[in-house]
Length: 462
Ligand code: ADP
Ligand code: ASP
Ligand code: MG
View 1 (cartoon, rainbow, N blue to C red):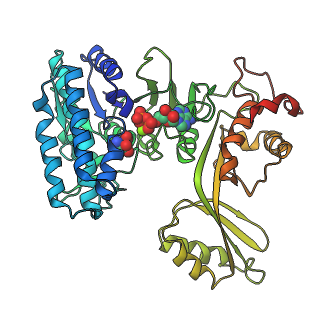
View 2: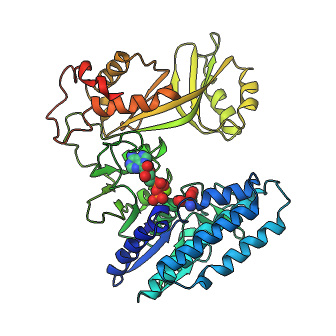
View 3: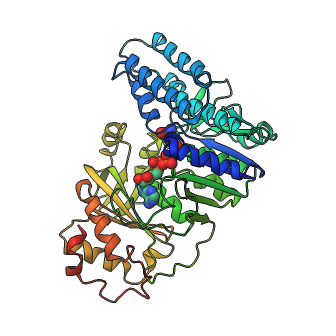
């Protein structure tokens, strides 16, 4: 069986939605499960509703119009969406004016986007002669813990999903992004989490392939909003794709590859509007990269903070690193990059909400310095960090345009050379490296020239 996941622009723009419906119908004879995201932009509006920052009446009115118009565009009756839209309106009365909702209420409200999208997609399929049914993730057996906003599937989820989705006629159209606690409360898996939903379902059902249908022709050599000439990367390993997703390639939710990796299920990223493009195939082993340079793609992540703990006295003493990481661990802050010197250790973190408490504890261990406004840039390709000359070439290019590198980490995974720069310089760095490493080249360069591309040919790259 296969899982086909359609993202927000694939289901949310009528022309793309028609294309997505056609793609499913062409495969209707196969054993499928479809996963859908909310129509593009809808989750943002629901998050706004939950925050209470904007008038809730106005948000509900806009969401009403959008979904009713979409129903008309797809030729399905309004009554497919009106019960859910009425329920959403009722949420206004249950919320204290202007006050943010609780975490559990936030997830219940955020869920309307995927619920509406699944009803619309299933009804449109049925109307076109392919019987389908909308299935809430919870009904599909996707049980999670109660970490609202960032829920994790429970160990028994694989079994409950396999049971709940054992019967796949009529075709299940499952809500992405959502889960349910054992006591029946709706959870969400984190923003962009529908990709993760597809992978969880695919792994539980032993899929032969998980397909992520989106608005780019695969995972590209860089974020196309930063590098318009970025090109699709035909093959990636799970490790490479995970690093890219983790370091900012939004096209895949960072956790997507975990369930696929565990079960060895290939993941394909495809373009709904251009279904004949080959897209990107992600599997356990990387195809040897034909480029001499070996880097395949560059990602960048904004909103990074570096924390440096300096202690002349203690760094080399055994147990020092353990003490530092124990503090981050206890406050449940994920650490991304780590570099050490003889007298200091620097780490980067994304989430600064609990940082003040961490800093005050770390001050008991050494002198602490916090630097905000940074970005991580990750140059990804199996073997890239150990490729002779790659690091030298990267940092020569950066030096040539006067970019200061704050931290460098040659990912232990051997697939990622990452470093930290000032946030405002990240886009320029990605563009420079994309060109400088030949990722924009139509023809695969035979090998990296000893000196790389002359810097003066890169003048336009920034
Ligand atoms: P969907 O709604 O289908 O889930 P997303 O908007 O979540 O789509 O992800 C697709 C977007 O991810 C692309 O339109 C692109 O702007 C962005 N993106 C960032 N990095 C990459 C990359 N390396 N390859 C492809 N897309 C990327
Ligand atoms: N609709 C959700 C979001 O916008 C999940 C997703 O798109 O994958 O975050
Ligand atoms: Mg997405």
